[in-house]
Image 1 (cartoon, rainbow, N blue to C red):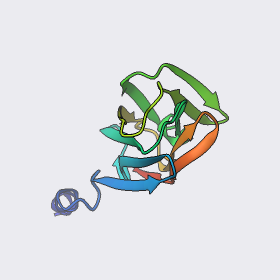
Image 2: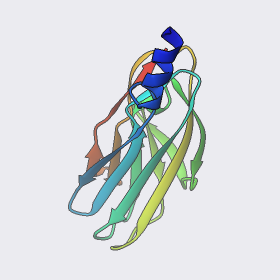
Image 3: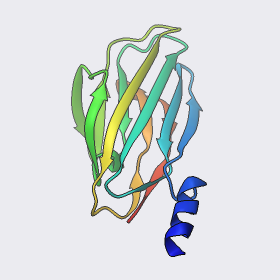
Image 4: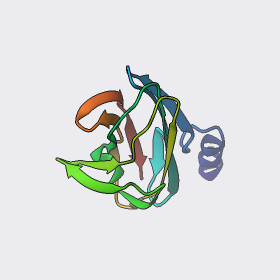
Length: 144
């Protein structure tokens, strides 16, 4: 009986990993982030980050919240950034210049560490070097 309840909840998405789409717009770009709100330890997941430039962004930087790396393991980032750096607890992915109308789509393949429980900051921010262009605040809950 208890197993049936768990299966039913997972099938309805109540405890699964349905992806949420979050959007933010700034003067230079639109930022679209697809990431689950809830995940379970040990499972694989995908995050998709799309940037559509409305004007030139000379030094596009995608800033990932610390939750992408604390409690989650990054298996791959495609396309690979030109460089990676840290900004405090955040990770900065640097890409080539985007002109008006260009779109950059970045995929992250992740796995939840089995011992991670609680909320993780999976905020995504787009900067032009250090100037904030758009930001999507997000928290992913990790269930046991």
